[in-house]
Image 1 (cartoon, rainbow, N blue to C red):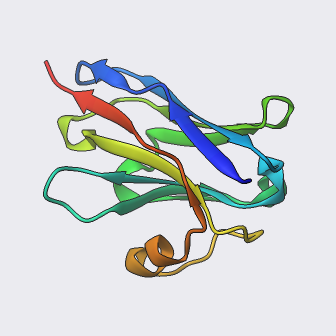
Image 2: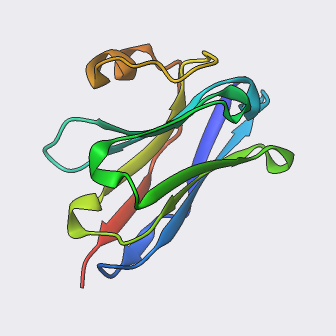
Length: 129
């Protein structure tokens, strides 16, 4: 059974850094594109980043470009989201997910959310002084 588990969230001051992990089981993570989403209270779920199978492409939402980096460690079957220069606006629950496709599809977020076939349970990131 395909499962994803996030970890690495926490409380960090503005300007700080965190590294989120998305560990896969039941399948090799590098077979599929893996996405990170986030959802703040009262807001819709937002697509943050994506890495294609075999690292052939990455995607970043405009507000995180230059601050967040997505990467893989295939030996650990894990995808990471390295988050630097964190802002209070980055506060949200962060989820990893996959649609079991090879490439990062360019679709509206609502479509992406509906078509993901596996989700992790989420990890809370709070950016506050």
